[in-house]
Structure formats: structure tokens, C-alpha cells
Amino acid sequence: MKNLEITESIKYRKLVFDENYLDKLDTFTIYLAFISLIVISVILFGEITPSKNNSLEYIILISVISFSFYGLYCKATEKTLKEIKFNIHKEDAKQRILEYGKKYNYRISKISNDLIFFNEPTDVYNSGHHEMTTIIFFKDDAILYTLIKEGAKINAPVLLSQHLTRLDLKKTLNKTKNTNTGYFSSLFHG
Image 1 (cartoon, rainbow, N blue to C red):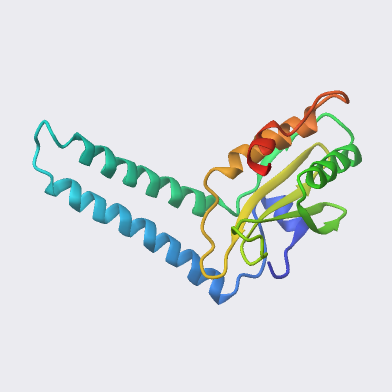
Image 2 (cartoon, rainbow, N blue to C red):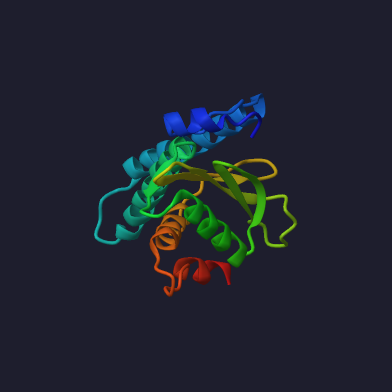
């Protein structure tokens, strides 16, 4: 992300940065792919002749349409920052978030007063060419965060990890000193 505006991003609760041509083309390609899946599925849906034996066809097409709408939603909202409030001091929250990142071996690529990036390889060989980045902004009583996937050719939307990360971050920020954190991450991070 080139020229990420921290103050503006926090103010508007959306990532504010300079998007290049390839980023815009990537977003357009993802939208086109999901819309194409929806259109093709709707056309195929109309081609099915009703009978007692084709319920599997309906289930598959409805699943593809539902998945495509969810994928569109995730891509459309990936730059929107989600908020998690906390009742501890801001510096304690930062420390807990950093401990969480270290515990699950995230590559902490950028730390500033109000911003932390966690990078995690998403490819099979951990080569670093495909990463999911968790971007966390700090306010006085809350964090704002989002997850972005960065791939070699297409940056697919984050579909499931955003919900699991939300649960982990909430648990991390609201834990007491003796409470274990990161149950959901332990399932997916080893």
C-alpha cells in the first residue's frame, strides 16, 4: 500500500492510500469473475427442468450464487475498517496485540504509534509471494482493523479468516492476565 494515510484512515474508518492502476484492475477482475459466476448460475438455473431428481443441481447453483454474492461483499468491504472496543489503556492494548502477533509467528512488518501490520504467508511453501496482511490501527479505546490478501496475480478477498481474526482480537484485548487467548488461531495456525 503506497502512501497509507493513518489519520485519514482512522477518521473515515476506511483504508486511505494511493491505489495504482494494477490495484484497480485487480478489483475489477475480481468483481467481473464473481458477477460472471452469478450470471452463468442464473442462466443454468433457468435451464433446469423441474423434476424430483434434480435437487442436487439446485443446491449446487444456489451455493455458487450465494458464494459469489458473499465474495463480492467481502471484496467490496475489504478496505472498510472493523472496530473492536477495549477497556484497557491504549499502550496495554498495543502490547497485547504485539504479543498475539509474536505468538502466532506473524511477520510484523511495520510498527508506528497508531499502526501495526501482521503479515502471514498464505501459499503452501511459505515463500512470501502470497500473503495475508492484518492492518491494525489504534484509537484511544478501540482498534480498527482489516485483512487484505496479496497474491502474485490476483488479490482474492478474505472470506473466512476475517471472522476468526475478529474473535481472536476481541479475546486478546478483553482477556484477564491468566486467560489463554487465541483459540481460533491455534486451530488454523498450528
